[in-house]
Image (tube, rainbow, N blue to C red; front, top):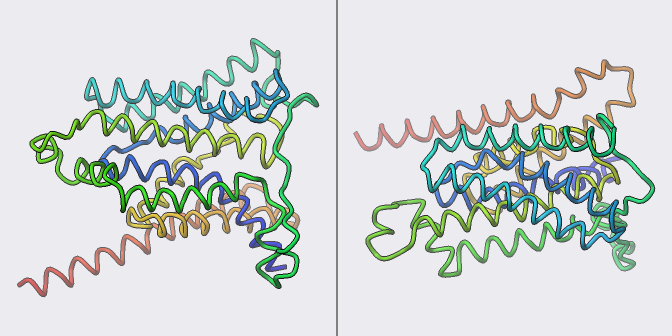
Length: 302
């Protein structure tokens, strides 16, 4: 039972992990990227359309990345170049993505709510033979969509880029002191733009995982708040790669518990609340711990 729950947790956590790792770049550059949700949703939609039209999963991934980066461009222009409020700009991008996907679905295909067709090609689970010989761990990490394994590799790559490359130093410099970064010749807007584009690419992969990895269909608003959950994972993980990954997995664990409880005689509305209740509780605990830590520091300073 525990192995099955953890296996599902890893699968459910993957889109959150990918979006959160993308949001980590913007977080480090001091850009509040509320648009993670919209970038993920448009990526999921574009991936399904491309898969339906071509039957090729790689073209679907490219189409998802392209669509997500167009939305990232909107966020960059209005949020960074025109210096709009990041929260308002991000919410506008999210609303635009939700409205556009619903509109195209209804006008182009005459469908509302769900778009499913046998022509849509998704990813196939990867079975690694030698993992069968590893007790407990093997069944948990085996037989997943390729995106699950890609997300682990990306997490390692994100840690290396942010902590051990010149680009990572520039990103952190911009986020910590923008004026000082300008003074030493760093092109601040270019760095911020690049972090949003990176987050768009990873959100596109998250969207593809939702629509072509876990399922082979598009459902209106199928991201279901995962972009905001990714932001919560970044906050709880204190902006670190490992912390972000761990809390993303915990939120995926809560989602897997919700799926398990749907088989019991419990009201569906209550069961669907579980992941969000879990997030509120975790955020409250993390916030309380930070507050106590700040109080202790203040007492020591006095």
